Each structure stands twice: as structure tokens, then as C-alpha cells.
Image 1 (cartoon, rainbow over the protein chains, first blue to last red):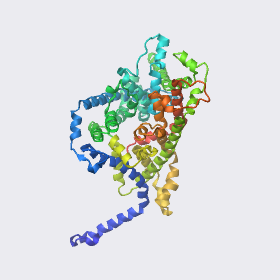
Image 2: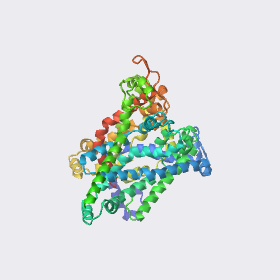
Image 3: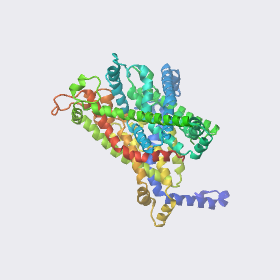
Image 4: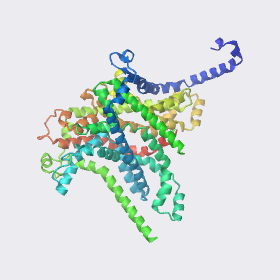
Length: 321
Length: 292
């Protein structure tokens, strides 16, 4: 390479060449490190990056027989269909409404529990409660939904209890009546994640200096004033960061859970974006349209995280990046 | 002063009672399912509200453990969990070590990893990729596409970076190359951290169900959660469990107790590893929350 350099660059050539040589020597010295990175890198390229490039089929009428190169290019046709369809509007509404409810109820639940756990003085009692409430996080959605079905079905525990204790004649159709669908989803998420969610808040609470509380007590501040003026400001950064990350998932509505809870009675309100992609793409093999929906979802998610992050920074918070 | 001390006590007791009720709400379902899973057929039919059976029989358990498809799916899941966790551990630790050192291109690769946490190709392109790499209808479809969890990779990389540099330099002086250093120094030092992440990965594999539905058409390959879904959620234990030889039982147990027995069997491994998980996870989650 240096041999081919034009004479004008000759003055600089030695230093460039020596830098180049040095770099090559370092790369050679690190050859085993590259070897170690290789399997993981291959994984990311094949199963994470290549599928992103594969999203071009959103602009094609993809057919598995013709492949990526042979399928016909159709431009924004699928996106036009997407924004035109009343069904998609309905699906988007279902998704956003559910996410809104989750952020309203499931998001603050661990914060409240962390505040309550933080007030417990008896350490052994606190640890016992913690080990119990963390457990459901590790159970699969099949088990969580299975348990709710055993409790809520027509002859399940709850209806049996209502019948025996209050003589209720007609069982309540918790699993069939669509009225219960969204509250059930939220309760399941709270049951599964409320304990696990406290860990990060408890850590933030442990970071608040005890001298702040002591000073506040001396000044005569009661429990609520201390919580309002010391505890909550101490949690603010953590709450903002987690809220940013949660906003990025506003179009993800817990696919694995909803897929299990879905039946023919609640399918009109349970049809969220991910379920729609699954039905269109996998069940009906409409790969291109389903990918267009997925691409739309991914881009919106990305914009939301980056936007929320910038907004948080403008308001003087740390942000995630 | 007296009034506020009284209020304080009231709050403490109220808080403690609330926490006990909450914890009971998480344990009670298992106690209930456990006790009812041992009910006899007659008692189950007669009572419409059952908490504690008079007579305990293990029929439901005998039934599911005589079902070939149940045993097969258990075996499949054990295989998936062991092989999958091994793949996770190898891929994640090697890449994390390489990226923890200062190599050319390392920053770009780390950026790519972070980007995959913010944006993913979604279900369909990933499905097509799994199909194109020939994994459809193979248990490896549940292993290779999930070989590395980006979050775990970043956390382990951070962990490796915090190992003192002197250790590394001393070994270089002794003429050790990076592979030797990784094997002889880094891995032994990180055993507790890697053990924690293997448990997390293993629990993830044990709980896999949707990937099974998506990638495996053959019911013979279905992991336990897919079978469990069929037994409990779709309420179809007969089909899920197939024909069971009736040598041991006079009467087939009611589907409800079969469902409960199946739930408990699938939960048991999680309960067994839970104490070990608990020892590690608070630490793991916290390392991850430190900004990289």
C-alpha cells in the first residue's frame, strides 16, 4: 500500500505506514480475542442483524419460492394498506389502551411495594416477604395463566368459594366475559412482577442517606412529608429511567401472556399488534404485510425510546444513554 | 408526641399485615393446587368447594407419569435446558471476554449489541431466518436463535472489565496468550457470576413455550410448557397426554387433578433452583443497572 502512494504523500508516508504497521501488530497480537468474539458475532449477524436486513420484504410481495431477490418490489403498498385498514386502527387501539393501563397500574405497583418494604424494620421478616414475592417472576406464563384459569373458571376456586360462602347461584364467567379480560391481564402482570420490580427501587432507597431522614425528623416532618420530600425525590432518577425503557415497549403488550389468554370471546379486544403479526404472518403466511406491521412497530418503539430519553435529559434527568 | 407514636405503631402493624396478605396471595395458589391434586375421584365430584381432601391419592401423578408424551416432553425440556444453557454460556462468555479487552472494532460490535436491544427485526423475519438456516422442526430452533441475551452479554462484559488489569499483565509476562488467560484466570475467577447467569438462562429455557409453538410442528418435540398449555390452558389433557396404560389405576383421575399435578411437576424444578437463584439475582440485576 505504501509503495503505491503518490510522491506528494511521501512526507507523511512513514508515519502513516508505521501507524498502520503498529495497528496490524496489535490486531495480530489480539488474534485470539477475535477468535473468542467470533461465535457471538456470528450469532448476532445471523439471528439479529440479518433479519433486520430481511425486513426489506416489507417492500416486496415476498414469496418463499422466489426468495428475497426474485420477489416483486411493491414499494409502500403494504404500508398504505396498513394505514388504511380499519382493523389495524382497532388493533393499535387495543395495544395502546392495554399499554396505558399497564403503565398506570402495573408500573407503579413495585414502587409502592418497595416503599412499604422499606418501612419494615424487622430484617428477617422483610427477607422472608421478599423471597416469597420474588418467586412468581421465575414462573412461565403458561403456569401463571394456568393457575388463573384453575382459580377463575366456572367450577374453579373463586366461584366455588362464592357459592359456598355467599350462596351465589350463578357462577361468574371471568374467563369468557370480555369485561374481565384487561383487568385480568393487569392483575397477572402485577402478581408475577410486583416483587421482582422492587429490587431496583429498594437499591435506590438504600442509597438515600439516613442523615436526610434524621434531619427531617428533627425538623418535625411526619412520615408522609418525609416520603414526599426525601424518598420520592431519591427515587426520581430510577423511575424516569424505567419509564423511558417502558415507553419504548408501548407497542409490545405481553405477547406470550395474551396469546394464552385469548379465546373466541375476547379476541376482538385481545387482538394486539403482536397477535396481529402472528395471525397475518404465521397463520396466513402473509409474510410481507406482517413484516410491514413489525417494521412499523419497531420504528415507533425506537423513536419513542430515543424521544423519551431526550425529553428526560431536557428536564435535567440523567437518561439511559 | 404520644399520638404520633400510636400512629406509627398502627402504620407498622397495618404494613406488616398487608405484606403477609400479599405474600400469602403468591403462595396460596400452590398450596391449593397441591392439596387438590391428591383428591380422589369421588370426593372431587361430590364437593363443589374443596380445600383439603379427606383422602389423599397420587392417582393424578401416576397418570401423567405413565403418559408417554408427558415423559417425552420432560426429557425434551431437560435436553433443551442443558444444551441451551451450555450454548448460552459458551457464546456469551467468550464474546463478553473479547469485548472486555480493548480490540479494534470492539466498540462497533458493542454498539451493534446495544442497538439490537433497542430494535429487533420482529417475529416474521426471524422466523424466516430460522427457516433458512434449516432449524425448523429441530430443538436447536429453540437454542441457537436465543444463543445470547444482549443484556447478559453487556453485564458479563462489565464484570470482566472490573477484574484487575494487573492479573492480566502478569500472565502476559509469563507468556500466556489470551485463550490461556481466558481459560485459566478469567473463567475460574468469574465462576459465581457465570453460575448465576447459567441459572437465569436455564430458567428461561425451562419456561420456553411460544418458540416451541412457532418453530416445532411435531408434537413429539414439544417442550413441557407447550404440553402444559394444551393440558391446562386449552383444557385438553386427553389429547395432550395420549393413551395411558390403565394398569395401575381402576379409574382415570378427573382432568382437573391431572391439570394440577402437571402444573406442579412443571413448577418443581423452578422451586428447586430458586434458593440458588435468589442468592445471586439481586446482585446481577444491580450490576446491570449500573450505566455502562
